[in-house]
Image (cartoon, rainbow, N blue to C red; front, side, top):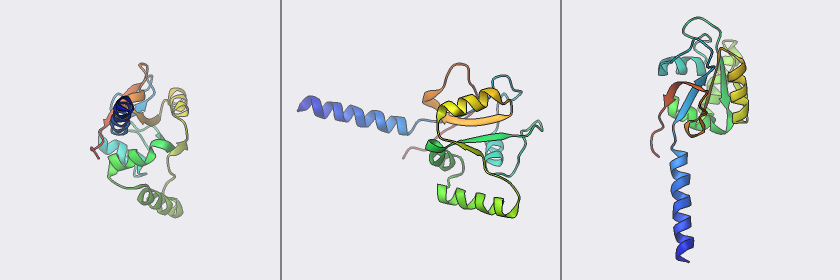
Length: 141
């Protein structure tokens, strides 16, 4: 019984620590994007700008399973607010939302094959060949 309780506590600790991991915004390693400011990421992911700082057309990618955490950490908004924001922009013809994918592997693939792509992943899942252009810190829950 004691071992089961210890195992449960360790599991809960690992789940809680994983839930609070940072989010890494990544870019193609061969692109000219070395780093981005938080404001750049906000402006691109919220549709205010559709270009990267050097003028290239931006291709932002949303990772569906991480989307709520990303926007909460980035702009302190819940998904319902983000969806409403994008609905207004799309309806008015002023923008289109980031390309949404359901798997981290697809983010890697799109970023790897598009020099203007930006994606985000859980920082715990970073691979050595990835270029991290911004590390989004999550506030502890």
